[in-house]
Image (tube, rainbow, N blue to C red):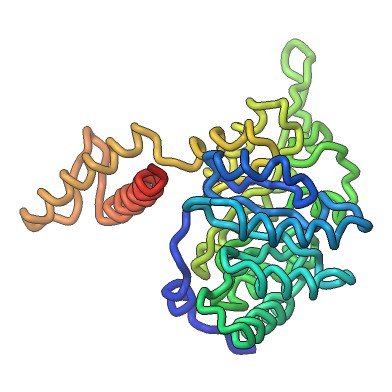
Length: 333
């Protein structure tokens, strides 16, 4: 199968902040106004896991009404539809795209292959032609099955509508049959024991059981111009654990994380924003290398540490990220 060149795909995608993505059940209208007033970059109205089967039609209608009637400001608005293997998926996609011009993204759960993304892309194309919708609907997809992880590179390059991949640790945990009861937290079972020391004590070293899946997904996103977003941390009382999970994701190249409770929004925004130290480093390295380049040198010393053109690129990424944040903050005022 031939796929578009990743540079071509990236050029077609809007640049969005997705540091925090707040989950809001579409059966809970009482949360809508508070969500709209929150600091979340992205909000998704959920028609899938947070909605009982008998309430699917009600949830869909609520989502359409909320998108049309509430002032969501500059937030990116998504709707998580039901999976393509369910009886509700077609109406979910058709109704919210036809009836809610404010919609930005369809959040597709459980894609197992590139075809799933391409199928939704074609549906969106047909609906947009039918309705004359001039705003192109993007796609974000949850990588939350073993098949999805196995095919993540093909999924990542499946469509120019695809903007982000999200690591759906909950359903991935279920699919991998690890039987963990709390999703997003480390597992005490995934550890190794050292040999006994002089005192006879063996130390226990925890590892990250989801590192392979997350690293592979992040790499696929960078290869094909997508945003990588980490999924839920369901113990919302554990703020330290959430911060640790977000920091781990940021270290792997993720751009944001889900918030399943409003208390997690500010922590996500902080974790995926440049720190004051990073901003100062970026400005300093840019000054040093600009001066070095004017003198005909491509490398220089930053207090005894070699910096070169790769560091200048890194500084540029940090500055661009902060400019995107500053622009969104100004637009909110």
